[in-house]
Structure formats: structure tokens, C-alpha cells
Length: 424
Image (cartoon, rainbow, N blue to C red; front, side):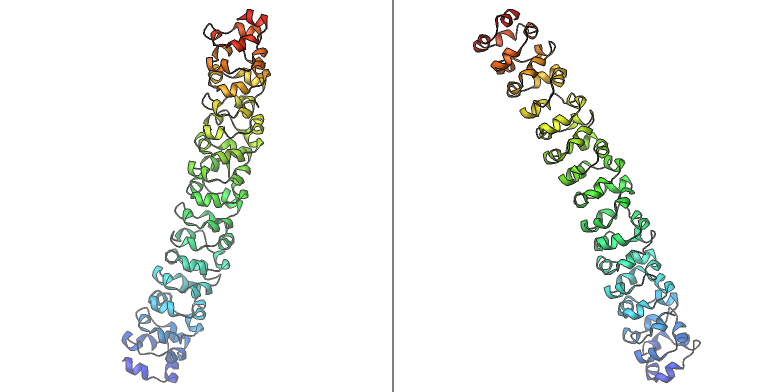
């Protein structure tokens, strides 16, 4: 009985054999003390069955020697109650062999104290079954040593719960193998703390699928270093969501490669903010394609500097839409070369605001073709300055329509030469 077992002196407990120990009833074992368990031979403890072990009190379990702890049957370990598991000392738990560690259930793993987790050896950690890994909490992952994080396998990592993942630090992530990082799923990645992302190497990040990059939160995207972003593949860049592109910092934008810039799709280009567009280097601006330029929103176009417009290819400049042209600042519009001005479509010419037209250099006015001239609106003609009027050639004036000629004001007509007047 329990009382009889409790009455055993330590010498008698020490004399118990591996044949006798399994004969105790569960009820009887409940009476065993820590001193008695401590005195038992390792072989006798190893003989305890899965039906007996749960009856041992947590107080008695404190007497388990580390050598005896290392010999418990895997089935006996799996039968330990969560209360028993959490009562184990760090020395006892650290003594468990890999077979014992592998036997731990999800509930048992969750019952482990943070001290026990910290006591895991780098030999034990890889032995944890996926089912046990799935039971770990965020606080337990915080307690995991970097050495243990470094030995987690690509089979174990996918078993970590999304709720637990915020507990991983950048140091732990950095310690993990490339294979383990690569095993993180699209469900797990968004759960990582933004600070933890610093632990992912540029190579590991670049090796991720577009689907994985695509699930990163906007906060995570913003948390990536400029080096990490600059090393994303063109496929990954093209796979970014509009929200992710919008989340990129100006520093990240500035450090994008020209190949990455060209990989941005039109939906992504349309999401660029004014601050992001201002952050584009002249090399990045020059890399924009004729498909990307028309996708820029007007607010972004309005922030283009003269240096950026100067850096654009003529093909890109001519790709501006008649909606974008009026959004350019007068300084940016003046950055167009006379050849580019002469190549603008009639729709673009008509879209230029009166203020913009009045700011153009006389060389730009003189460059307008006889095809473009008839596209000028009455309001635009009346905005022409004296210098611009005088820069118009007789050929240009001759191309004006009967609707345009009456638009000239008396003061404009007064500064025209006789040959210009004759050309009207």
C-alpha cells in the first residue's frame, strides 16, 4: 500500500531491483518520498512503467537523480503529467537523453518552465518532436538559447506556432541555419517581430519565394534594412503588394538597384508617394521604362525635380500623359529639351497650363512644330509673353487657325514684327 511504501527505509528502497519496481501499484507509488526515489538504483527507476510514473508525487520526483532521469523509458516520460514535467529541476531535465526528449508531448512541452527551456542542450533541442515544438509558447522561445535556436531543424521550424514566433529575437534568427529559415511558412513569417527580421541574412531573404515575401506585413517591410531590400530579387520586387511598396522608406527606395526599379509593376509605381518619388536617384529615374512613367500618380509627378526630369530618357519624357504634363512644376517642364518639347503630342501641348506655357524659354516656344501650334488653346496663346511672341517664326504663325488668331491681344500684336503680322 501507499503507507507501506512510505514506510520503506532508504536502504530498502535502494535494494529494490528492476524486477520488483514494476510490481508496485500506482496507488502504492503515490506514497514514495523523494529520499526513497533518490535511493533507488538507476536500473529500478528505469523499470518504472508508463502506468506507474504519473502516480509519483512532484515532491517525490525531486529526489530523482540525474543518472536515473537519463534512463527513464520513453513511454514513461510521455506519461509524465504536466505538473511533474514543470517540477523537474533544470539538472534533471538536462539529463534526459534524446529518446526521452523526443517522447515529450505538446502539452508537456508547453508545461516546461523557461528555466527548463534554457537548460536544453544543443543535443536535446533537435530531438524535440514537431508535436512538442508546436506546444511551445512565446515566452518559452524567448528563453531558448541561441545555440539551441541554431540547431533547430527544417522539420521542426514549420511546427512553431504563429502565437509563439514573436518570442524569437534577431540573435536567435541569425543563429538559425539557412535551411531552417527557408522552412518558415507563409503563415509564420508575418508573426515574426519586426526586430527579429534583422537576423535574416540578405542571402536568406533573397532565397525566399515571392509568396513568402508577399505576406510580410508593412511594418516588417519597413523594418528591413536597406541592404536586405537592395538584395531582393527582381521577382520578389515585382511580387510586392501595393501596400508593401507604399511602406518602403525613402532610404530603402534610394538604395534600390536600377534592375529592381524596372521590376516594379505599374500598380506598384502608381502607389509611390511624393516622398518616395523625391527619394529616387537620377539613376533610378533614368531606369524607369515607358510603361512605368505613365503609371505615376499626378501628385508624385508634381514632385519631380529638374535634376530628375533631366535624367529621364526622351522616350520616358514623351511617355508622360496629358494628365501628368499639367502636374509638372514649371521648373520641371523647363527641364525638357527643345527636341523633347517638339516631340510632345498635340494632346500634351493642349494640356500644358497657361502658367506653364508662360514660363517656357523662348527656345522651347520656337521649337514647337506646325503640327503642335494649332493645338494651342486660346488661354495659352494669351499667356504668351512678349519674348515668346517675338520668338514665334512666321511659319509657326502661318500654322495658326482662324480660331487662334483672334485670341492674340492688342498688346501681343503690338510687339510682333511686320513679317509676323503678315504671316497670320
